[in-house]
Length: 448
Ligand code: FAD
Image 1 (cartoon, helix red, strand yellow):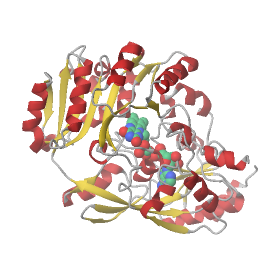
Image 2 (cartoon, rainbow, N blue to C red):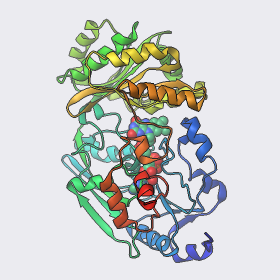
Image 3 (cartoon, rainbow, N blue to C red):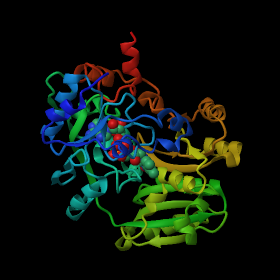
Image 4 (cartoon, rainbow, N blue to C red):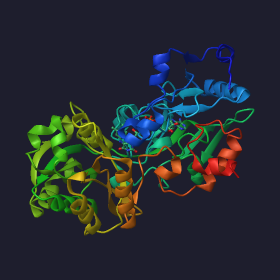
């Protein structure tokens, strides 16, 4: 489609526009390259230009201009997604919301923030008042709250509060539509699920009300083990011990700890390791659990020293993959949900079945009241066919794979089309301009 971009920019008087080619290319990308499959599919996808609004009124102006010319619009927070969520498949405009970043108010247990606010920046405002965001990805320092809701799932804190998709973890949103006359809608209650984790395909979130949790003094702890399954069962037991307050239970089979150069001093060669965040007042009785499992505490950074230097969390969740790929760029990863089983039999089976080809990395979190391990296994990639065979084997044995090697919303998640989100798109984005090509439910509906 031929667009007169100079004229388009003129209609946006006052809104910051980026047209410098290298910058536009950079702002068209995320961390899709963790996947060798997405690398080949997305490397050449670039927007025509980037706009960076500072207010909801400016977002409305951009929306109106895009609808008028039928220009695709893809929302971007910080671009730390892993599945090419914010990479524009059909060119057009990138709407970079990083300047829409105010914390509007904080009340006990709740904050109202603009979508481009960085997660760490929100905590900086709320923590002195005794409250903090309930969960964050390991990209805490860079990711935005809008991007986390749009494209993330959970992370540090999910052992207490579950995932972003769980009722109670997102209170309300303001959403700009892409109708002929764009509107601002306020969604509250279960209506927030219409846009929660929709890759920005059915509305531009400009503002969110997010529930907060009480601040604890969080200690960072590493416990090492001689045996992987003992480490895994220790993780499960810590998760199941409700009286011990914790925010992170991340368990790594050898040789994964050897990829953590910054933690070398605390990770003896060949060890299996649990990287943890435990509330300082729980530390004394936590030591009893460590003793019970025969673990060794090799690192304990007290709460008053955390926040200084390296954050332990930045070795967990998908930062594990990042550190491993820094050492060996041929590595990729999987995302697996294991069924609830305190004995971890399927984890053990997969660990033994694949051996060094699929290195076990578990993140414990809470699902429907039960603690289960999610895995972000490191995979020694050989061919796409072999990767698919590994995925198929997991699914045939009852472990659900949230496939990180697809940019399609549904295929990367629960596999099922969410008709509520597709209906909402039909209502607010009738021309299908928002992040086109990412929502399978919409593509199928359009194909009839
Ligand atoms: P972006 O990547 O910019 O956007 C993500 C998606 O949301 C895109 O589809 C975009 O179009 C959409 N979007 C962005 N803003 C809006 C908006 N205002 N309205 C509507 N749609 C919007 N994720 C986890 O869940 N947990 C983790 O622990 C985790 N660890 C990671 C570790 C590493 C090293 C990396 C590279 C990624 C990790 N991720 C993780 C993925 C990602 O960092 C997070 O999901 C992050 O919260 C995304 O935020 P962002 O601002 O970078 O979003």
